[in-house]
Length: 482
Ligand code: IFM
Image (cartoon, rainbow, N blue to C red; front, side):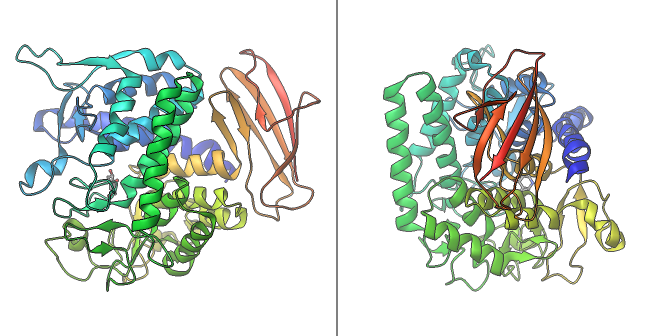
């Protein structure tokens, strides 16, 4: 964990952040895909501590391909700033937007402000994507307006159960259900985005906006718990005919990981359901080589479901160990206080431990691959698509912000570790807004979560949020878990 979080994962985050840019350069002449709105937003979240300026520039580009209605173009070329609708453009009978893209922008901007304290960014004017005949943007508005339109788009595009419409797809690119289908992933991502909007509105003392976001959050929480609890876990989708996917009623694709982890991340799952959902992930989806995305895999092409059914069971999004989704379960486990489980999940996908079985893994033992073939596949354990994966960003965030628990917030650096009970503590140095925090965490009671006391330079604090210090200063932080 030490070497991964200090060296290898930040390097992979930096490379992943830049990779799509180079790909765009290379592909300029071929009109190929360019940068993805969703992927780059998440890459930014892992690269912020090392490259805040670069991340800000990329955020500006991303927001300038957001549409006037609040949704976002799926991909764009950063050299020409020409954007496209991704694979949705080729399917005439399917919606032409992805239901998650624009919401990732809310998370990326929030994390940028937490890391840097650059609140003025919310006032910066950025055009929306649509242009008139003279190539002049139809509308330009503040970043805050871009974020508000993003959550409003989701609020206004819901289906028969009141859940967000899937559009062409959500984070899972390969499940492309007919128009009218609904997405639980997008419902939860919307919940996380609304929490960020509530916090930002509170800081800006915009109480009217804050009350609106709170009402929208409560409303979606009620809808999700009313429409999407399957008895032991949460559903993943409703199709256009109102049939659930990710239900015990389905013969294949009975349970999806993201529907469980994100129910916890969004705060929509009440405690008992949160625990049952994560236990279902452990019992039904976990393998010793990582957590599968769903199970059992679909067994044969089904034009209604789309790309996911083109893979054999156990491969890629069809029941494979899709690593990007693993850190979300780690984070969810820390939210419930389960440090042992969170670290078990961190460790079992740590590429470094694959050094012993490299002939099976076939990937660099310091790089997260996109996927590992799951236990339904004869080549269980074989990794593919090294380097270019959001796993790097999220494994970094899960490790530093949630397991070690050192997390930037708007008004300071929160210390909230959730570690294995047999750790006696750890030390970590974090540079934050120009100051250096030398943090020593002690765990005398061998607990998994809980902060008993925090002192900075020998002075006891009355909270676990470290203050913001003058740039260039160095501070000794002592945390006693209890
Ligand atoms: O979320 C997507 C990502 O945008 C591209 N690779 C596959 C992921 C899951 O479908």
